[in-house]
Amino acid sequence: MKKRFLAVFMMFAMVFAVTACGQSKGGGDAVTIGQTWVITDDNPLDGGNAWSITSHGISEYVFMQKEDGSMESRFVDKLEAKSETEWEITMKKDAKFADGSKVDAKALAACLNEIQEKNKLSNASAGKIKFEATGDYTLTAKTERATTDLKSILGEWTNVVFKKDGDKYVFTGPFKIKELKAKSEVTLEPNENYPDASARPKTVKIKAFKDINALKLAFESGEIDLAFGLTGDIAKELKDKKKNVIDFDAAYQYYTFLNLENDILKDASVREAIDKGIDREAIKKALDGGTLPTGLFAGYNSFDAKVSATYNLNEAKALLDNAGWKLEDGGKYRKKDGKELTLSIKTYSSKADLPKASQTIASELEKLGIKTSVEVVDDISKVTASKKFDILVYAQHPSPAGTPVYFLNQFFRTGGPNNFMSYSSATTDEILDKMGSETNPENIDKLAIEAQEQILKDRPVLMTMDPKWHAAVSDKLKDYKLWNGDYYIVNSTLKVK
Image (tube, rainbow, N blue to C red; front, top):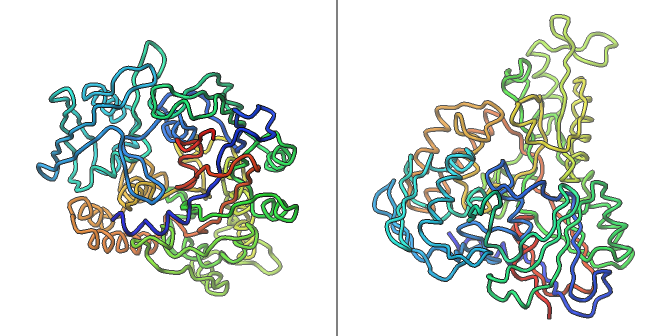
C-alpha cells in the first residue's frame, strides 16, 4: 500500500529550514510557531491528547508516517502474524525515553495496554488488544477482532510510547516540555536522547492564537516564524504582500455529521433533503479554495469512493414537502403538525475554516425553509461525548496511517468509539468485518468503497469539502518539512544549520 501514497505525500511536503541568521525575537537558535491551539496537559490517555502532544513533537506513535507516506518505527523491527488475531513483535534496541531509560518490551507493552484500557478510541480497528512481553525486546499482541494490518493500528494516533515517572509522563519525541501554560503557550527544548538532538534549536515555542487575524499580525510583525492554519482569504492577503505562503492539500476532510437520535433527522428523507440542499461550490467559495469531495477520503486515495454530492434545490424542497414539512403561505420556515423545522449547527474554533463552512451551510438550509443557527465552541470533544447536537461540522484526517480501516471502524461501526451520530447498519458492520480479515490491498480498497457507498446512502454524514490548507513562513525557515496535515507540525526535521 505504500506505493499508492508515495506521489501524494511528496506533494504534501513543504520545505523550509531553520538557519542561525534569522531576525526572530528568540534569536538565531530559537523558533516560534503560531497556530490555533496549544495543549492543556500532556496526559496521553485523555481523549485526543495523544494526537496533540505528537503534533507538538513531544511524543511518537509506535509507527510514524514518513514524508513519502510510508510507515516507519523507531521501536519495532518486525511484525509477524501467527493468526488473524495473534502477532509476534520484535523490537529495535536503541530507542530511549527522554529520561535516558530504554524502551524495551516491558515498557512498550505497559503503555500500550494502558492505552487500550483507558482510551476506547484505541479499540476501533481490531477491538481491544492485549500486549505481553515475552523477552527483553519481544512481545505478543492478541486482538479481539481479526486484523491483517497491525502496523497501521500501531500507527494510529492513540498509540503513543510513554512511561510514568511519579505523576509525570515521559515520552520519546524529538522535543520535551520545558514550560507549559495550558491552552496558551508551550516552550520546548531538545530531547537529548533523540538522534541528532544537538542539531535542533535550543528553544521552540508554540503559541496559541484564537483569532486568526491576530495570527496573521504576529507573523507580519516577526513575532512568529511559522503561522499554521491560515484561512484562504488571509493566505491570499499575505501573498499580495509578497510574503512566503504555502498552499497544500490538507489530507483532512470536512464533514457534516447528523445526529440520528434527533427526531427530525431520524427521517431519511430529511437527511437526503439536507444533503441535496447544500451547494458545495458555495462552501468552496467561502473558504477561498478546496476541492469538491468524492467520498469520505481525500480524492487521491485509491480507496476513495469516487462519487459526487448532488445539489438540487428543487428535489430537496420536494423531499421536505413529501416528509410533511411544508411552507405555509407567506411563511419563511417549514412546519409539521404546528412545529417549526429548526436545527442547530455546532462546530469549533481551532479549525478556522469550520465556522465559515458552518455559516454557509446554515445559509443553504435557510433557503430550504429550515430555521438554522450556528454555535462555535472551543472544546468539540465535550459536544461529541454528550451527543448534544443536531448537526456537527467537523474536520478529520481519515487515513493518517495510509489505510481506511481505522476511520471507518471508529466512526461508522455500530457502537464505535467515535460514532457520535448513533449510526447503526448491519450491512456496514458486515463490510467492516470483512475488511479486518482481508489481506489483499485491492480487495480492502473495494470493501472500503462499498462501505462508503452504504454510509453515504444512509447519510449519518454528508461529504462537505476536501480542503486546501495554508501556512506562512519567515525567511528564517527554508528546509523544514511538514506533511500529513497537522499531525507533525513540530517534528524531527526541525534543525539548526
